[in-house]
Length: 379
Image (cartoon, rainbow, N blue to C red):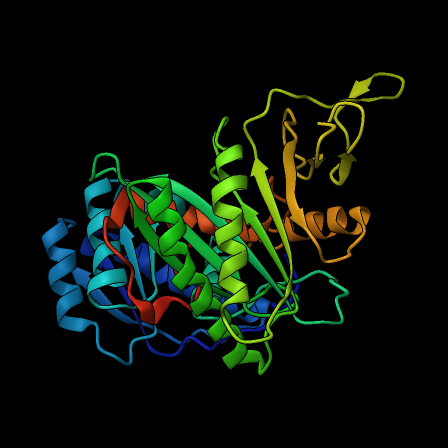
């Protein structure tokens, strides 16, 4: 992606940059490199409204944000001195819940090394574009009918005992480059199922508004299922999910595939050549070491370090798509996570759902504004 234009870019014309006064030269260089990176990826980045702060206390950032963020501000970028968690949480809560605006927090030391500045600002520019509603890249997904992919993952809420957050991310086009994201707070598995229904209906309504049609194929990738919970997903969650789509509209009966994603596996795969090596990304094993009672497969999609495959269990599949094509489709989805230009261990909608749920569970502890739901503000 070093010399590539992004798929869809959004001009960044009206934005704020907050930074401590002691980092004013760093902020100046950051803006310069960011504008250069924007041109490289085809994104217009104008000069920001710069706000120099007397210190880096939480209250100082929040006071400046309350005084400066208006409805026409597209983006807020905050340069902070260190990884102080309560300051990060305060900034994110304000920009996500109190006064919704996409926000990027940048740690000063990550910009301090001049030779790494261009790489950092290029990655940040890609993130800013996606948070504004742009699209970074895609892969060829040859469906001829409207398709929706739903990623679901859960994360414990650190502020409320026994409560968890579920992130639900629905693709809004067949090439899976635009998404609609919501969260659910729940205390028990039954609560999750009941609260999942209106979110999925809302995703269908948004898809129909954007595309003019409803999806004919729906693929649900369900992460966050612990060992021993699979039977509960099959017996209680799957029937309710089917009901969501059957009751959405009269005579609407899309093809459905429900796939449980599990990264916590002990299985390791190797390829034997003259030596024993890691298998290349895209390797699939769907026989011999898999369960015999259902369609399941192991896939290696990441290429970093010691490889642990991801296990996919297909608990329902009536789309008529051949097993090989479902596996290929799953692998293609691992290319579409915009935080890094490479494959990841799970389909991108699952990773987005994880990022969303972890942001809410760790930092926000409240529901993000609905006004940000059609953007990847949590990248």
